[in-house]
Image (cartoon, rainbow, N blue to C red):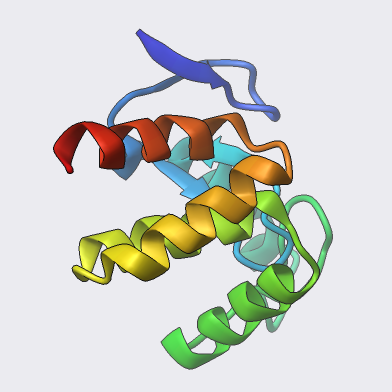
Length: 125
């Protein structure tokens, strides 16, 4: 089983999300770590001072605070992937009301994975 294909190398993304990365700057597709690593090597070889996103070419965040800022910008723009990810994060920290609110909003915005996470929350009460 897999979660679709990496949009860059077209290899299947496995269920183990430790081997995949979501771009926080633009909330674009999940890519495999191999493609992320290859892009990083290319940018280092080109002597770039700051790494950029493979999709939007925006500078990648260098701190956790900067990453959070990018995520919140995407949430404010009603990006369903960013809203869902915020819901999943809230669920992990035990804030179930906030998790439900964000996953419901992402589902209304058309995110299929948000529907799955809502069903998971309903199943577990």
